[in-house]
Every structure is written in structure tokens, then in C-alpha cells.
Image 1 (cartoon, rainbow, N blue to C red):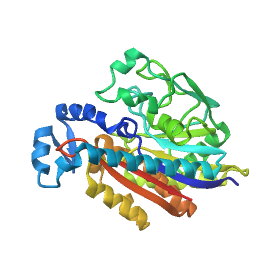
Image 2 (image 1 turned 180 degrees about the vertical axis):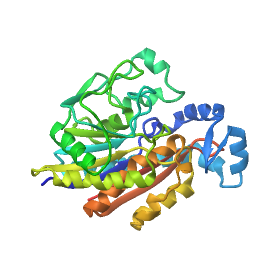
Image 3 (image 1 turned 120 degrees about the vertical axis):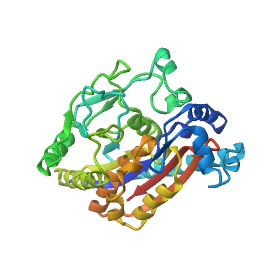
Length: 337
């Protein structure tokens, strides 16, 4: 039977790929944002800054030297993940991520979708497409997509086996053998996956099965409990697949953003360290708004690692602030073996 040899979780935000001197580009976008989600409520920038003024010394957090230190810590943790991936010598990767209107649109947004095609592509954006990206995002694009279109191998036999087993477990997953053409006019793999292929696999991409979770778009977003149980069944499917293949499971996304909430992130990571899976299953839906919804890309991984009996060996957390309102991206890094 196939063996799960590695579980790996990583954030994928732009602040991981652009120097701290450029974080102010995203800060400028934060100041214009009138829908900043924080602890279940919505604020504009000024109201949020006023609410959080006494929370911590944000001017110190956004000092350039502090931002440089945070960036350096992220790079160190990313290297630890790359080294763990390389050491695992996996034959196949099952990659958990989300789509943000890159492929799916209001025409159809599945709660869970499994790709089981023979191949797929990572297509760089044109200059015209780059110009339409949110403020401060374009400089990070090289971290998600190569300079020229890259072709990646799928693993259709494992993909189909996973779909069959998930259906048997009463998860009505969508299936795709060819990625749909999205709003950018192509069928490039979303950035959550491109980040893994470029920044974890370092463009030496092994065959993979992309698994997509609707983290962002109600009303059919799966709950934390549903995501955790999905991960359990996903691990069972992988381990039941005939053969001797070594499989890595990789989750891409998170942590809290565009407003950092260290208290919520700590609640999640403390529960993971303690194997307190009921706390993970019971996380309230009100917390999964805006970018923070990407926590749900990791939750199936927690379920899978619990089911596979894997040991958490490394976990790091780096809050990368970029404004006095506490906006930014909290970065998470972890692996199980």
C-alpha cells in the first residue's frame, strides 16, 4: 500500500517573496479597505487602528528592522520545509489549497474538488494581467509562476482512487481531468499550488494531485469539522492505494490575514501541538473570513496526520505586520514525519 511519508504546511502570502522595504505597497491597499475582518467584526482602517491601539506596540512591529527580522525568520523556516520535503523523497504529492476566482467563478464553485488529469500547467500572467492585480501583489508573482509556462505531471490513478474512496465515504467531491479556463483567460494552476511547486519543490515538481477546498465563498464552504473529517478520509484513501509509492501531503495557505490575530492563530497551533482535535473541529465559522479562511487548507492536513499517526516535528509562526492597525499576514510553517 502507499505510504504517507510527510505532511507539510506553509503560508504563501506575498510578504514571503518581496523584501520588507516593499511591504508598504500592501499597506497602502489596507488603508483603502473598508472590509477588514477582525474577531468576527468588520472595520475600516481607521476604526481598526483605534480599536487595536492599546493591544501592542504596532509602531515597533512595523519598524523596518523588525520587518527585516520577521522576513529572515520566514526564510529560515521555508528552508526547513524545503529540506524536509527533499529528505522525504516522495514519489507523489497531494496538495491541499484553494482557488480565489482564478479557475472557478460564480458559474460553479465546488466545496471540494479533486484533479485527476494526466497533466496541468503553471502559466505566467501577461503584463496586462499583472496590471489588474491588487496593489502590491504583482511583485510577488514570480514566487507563484515561472517566467515561461511550466508543464506538471498529474497522477490520475491516485486521483481517481481518492475520488472513489471519498464518494464511498459520502463526500460528494467534484472531479476534474482538465482545469477550467478562469477569469485570466487560461487554465493555470492557482497560486496556492504554484507557490508549493516553486518555493517548496523549487521547480523540481513531482507528480501531484491538487485538491481544492472552497475556503472563501459562501454558502457552500465546508466547516472546520467537515474539513478535518475530509482529511481523515483522504489519508485513508492514500494509504489504501495499491503499490509502494511514497506520498507527501502539502497544505498551502494562511494564517490570519489581512488582519493578523495572534490569539486565534495561537488557539489553532496550540491545539495542533496538543492533538486537541475537538478544538480544531469546533473552530467557529465567523473566524474564517477574508484571507484567514485559508486556515481551512491546513485543517484536512491535521485530520490526515492524526489518521496516519504522524509526529509533528517542526512548527514556526511569524506575524508579519505592515501597519499600525495590525494588518499583514501571519505566516505558518510545519511538518510531520
